[in-house]
Amino acid sequence: MISLDFLDDVRRMNRRQLYYQVLNFGMIVSSALMIWKGLMVITGSESPIVVVLSGSMEPAFHRGDLLFLTNRVEDPIRVGEIVVFRIEGREIPIVHRVLKIHEKQNGHIKFLTKGDNNAVDDRGLYKQGQHWLEKKDVVGRARGFVPYIGIVTILMNDYPKFKVRACTLCLIKGVILGCSLQQHIY
Image (cartoon, rainbow, N blue to C red):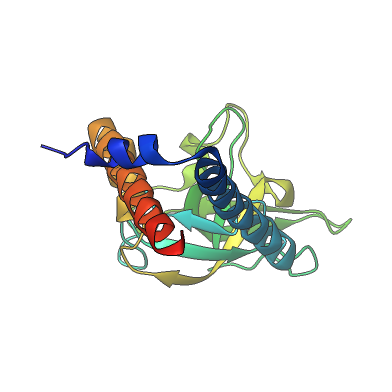
């Protein structure tokens, strides 16, 4: 069972120490948000980092792989390129490979995707009546990956109790660390 001794440390904090802890937490959260927004600007992608959630791209990518994306407007989409795209009505983006490109005479490009491990193309995934994707559907293009690092995200989504326990444990460890640092400072 988890020891709740840290609550005694929190109760012993004066207002200034508690304010310092809250301020530190706020700085950590705001720093993380600034880094995320900075990555969005640098990569041109609304989501510069995504986790592969299924096995549809095996053997190229496995479930839990962390992908780094870019989405430069000036870069043309090519057959064989791995893209992350959103479909209207679906919340979670999909990571698949460009299978075919259809270019109109006016230069407008549409493309078809397919998972490497899937038997058929993605037309069954697209919204009803949609047969091709357009550049506006693309969240980003895979430029690099770290294997299996994103498995923690999958565990948190698949097992909500794991998420609660992991967040609680992190919060407790953070408060304990903060309290021990406070004792050394004051």
